[in-house]
Length: 342
Image (cartoon, rainbow, N blue to C red; front, side, top):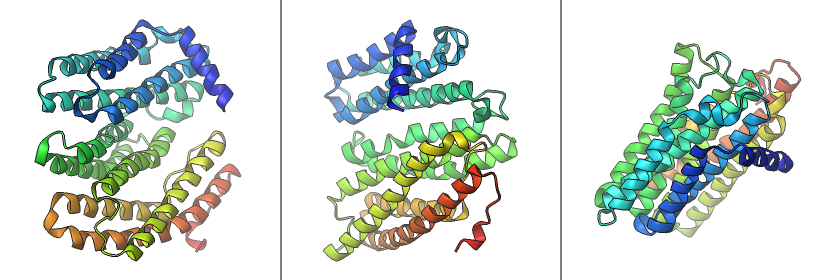
């Protein structure tokens, strides 16, 4: 796996385009010249990771022996580059205005995340057309909804932690978070209505859930100094143990998918247990967001969040068992009856 990554990066460097050089230059200059404004290190690291991902996807695309990567559609589209440089100019000219600077950084992050996922999906589809089967090789509206949700959600922790828009930052972060939670169900609905249920969409959905959840959860922990507004240390320890169980389940899922994704011909969607677990995760995010946004109800929300986290831990254990058996059944190309597993 590591050798493949270096191979793709070498190919990407060999075929690097002027647009990618300008893209990376904008990223580096944005932080080295203006990085102290709005506590932007977290945002800058996200953009750097996205730039490396885009270049790596470029190299992976080159492996397909298709047309020269620098001249193909994913890297010819000017919009991400234009928005990146507009963000850079706004950052440069708005040093005395924290609000405009923060907005420019968020626009840069949103553009970088969306562009990175866009290039990765097209590179994956170039290797195996089954990833975007049903959309004629295009990303498709449902996948764009998923990508946009993830691009928005990485901004939420920064809003909670830094408060670049003053007292309204928590309200704005909570609003974006609720939009992300709502669109988590919308992408699947749109995919079914448009008959665009793709293998890529099945992979994006659980990945998007994790990108939404964990950075926001860390922001909640930091904002409450690790107390999550729970009164006793016993409740806090139980909460952390449940959180660790939930995190372990997601790590195992990612490892399993990384090992077996080439053998999963049709991908693997969410099981019923996973859907209930995700509903509980969304509920925990919701009540925690309300606790930060409406101080008068934070202790009641803390108890509700504790109950949801207990449920998430129990569901995580069952999810590991069921998903393991579902992956095995998918690899062996046999049906799996989820209802008889418990």
